[in-house]
Each structure stands twice: as structure tokens, then as C-alpha cells.
Amino acid sequence: MDFHAMQASARAVRAQHAAMELERYGRSWTPEEIMLGFLGDVGDLAKLVQGKAGVRPRDDLDAALAHELADCLWSVLTLADAYGVDLEAAFDATVRDLGDHLRPAPED
Image (cartoon, rainbow, N blue to C red; front, side):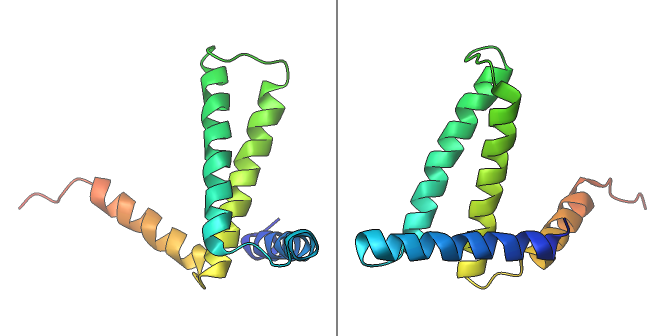
């Protein structure tokens, strides 16, 4: 799946969540509430990373890690969409900047 398809898929799932939230709570979550959910997912991811280090073992560790990484990616895509961030362009620029920063300076 390419980046735009991933973004469209994340947007579609967010729309389903928003409809469910509207039905349950009378309104959909704000970006701030989505961010709080993301923080919980990051905490879950941290526990799974500990599991990979042997600290929190579980039988389904690899599948749970893959799921949680994807869940975190969904949150990032959803937040980028909520704030109008072109995440693909921002990612490309950031990776390029990181690479430039790590490249040795030319000698004079």
C-alpha cells in the first residue's frame, strides 16, 4: 500500500470512529483527545518493546508489536490529517535533513 492509500485508509477509519463517537457521546473526539489516545498506544508499544528485550514476555509478542506499531502509525496519520500536514512531504524533508546533518562535513 502506498502512502496516499494508507492516508485514505486511515481517514476512512477515522470517519467510522467519529460516527461511533457521535452516537455514543454526542460528538466526535477532538484532535487533542486523539492525541491522548495515541499516548496510551505509545505506552502499550513501550511495554511490547520491553517484551522484545525479554522483560515483559508474552506468547503473541510479534503480532502484538506489529499491531501496536500500525496503531501508532494510524494515530500519526490521523493527527497529520486533522492539522492539514502533508506528512509525506514533511517525512521526506525530515529524513533528508537528518541525513544531511549526519553526513561528514567536507574538508577544506
